[in-house]
Amino acid sequence: MELDEYAEKFSSTVTNGFIALEIAIGHKLGLFDSLKKFTSPVTSTELAVSCKLKERYVREWLGCMSAAGFVSITPDDKYFIPEACKPHTQSSGFASVLPLIAANTASLLECFKEDGPKGYDYSNQLDTLLWLDHNKKSCDSKWINENLFPVGFKEIDTITNVLDFGCGPGSLTIKLAEHLPNAKIYGVDIDRNSIEKAKEKKAKENIQNVEFVLVENDHLDETWTKKFDWITLVDTLHDLPNPNFSISDIKRVLKDDGIVSAVDPCVHSDHKKNRGNQSAATLYVLSTFMCLPSSMSREPAAANGIGWGMQNRAEFIKSHGLKILGDENNGLIQFRKA
Image (cartoon, rainbow, N blue to C red; front, top):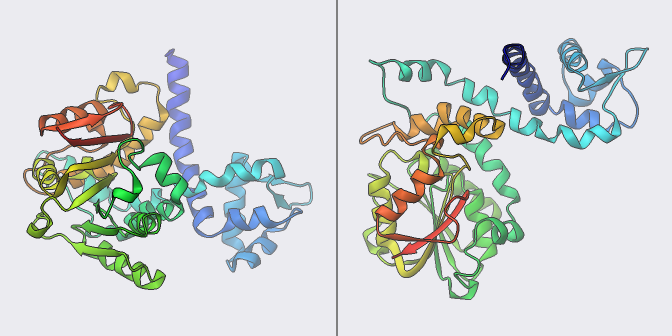
């Protein structure tokens, strides 16, 4: 990269970080949604009224969005998003995690210090976990078949018991229960707040074939040995502080012909192979604030995080006497007992 290009990219990235925070506010307050519903330009007052907000704050937000070029403005000071541009504001939802993870900045800075704590867990990050859980509400049967189910390795009618390991607030677990109505689905997590939220969802949606269990001392129920036909780990494996113990326990409760489906971010273990990959750079931010501190939150503090990468994940799985089925350099990896 040329010096001028480097300087411009560095400066614009910092500037865009500020603007992204304002985008996050617009998403959380429904400003983008409201602007998209209007069929003609509106005043700052009309937009504020539609969202039940103070006009002065809305006007400042519009100032930022119009300066950045994301909201258009008419000669008589009315605001609109061009019709063709409206679908492209959808990524504002991703920006909404920024204030949530930024709340951990002080704790993260202490973790960086040589004499500071190793990490922190998700016990005080329920809002972040709910944000992570939100998109899983849309994981219908089509999504499950295309992105998670061990197609070609397992038939749906052979599955009677499923374990969603690291279920969080439970939206995906419930979707799995809907996808497999004749199976019993168990969602487990070490975070008490998440399990309580998951149980609330189960009661609200009246899903009968799902059960949520709080895992204490990391140990799965002894009576579950060789119980599960299918085990899912979605964005979980790289977060674990003691993955060796967890994978051994998962192997114990997996049937001899069972399948494990693990989903982790598509990041190379070798930093050099991630150069120029903006998606990888973004994932590293999430990992620095969330995944790495979780993986270092208690002994033995594996310190994996997203930077662990696909290649190290594959070697880890194989080192535990498990056989990878298909491509191991994928976000989704399927494996079974060797």
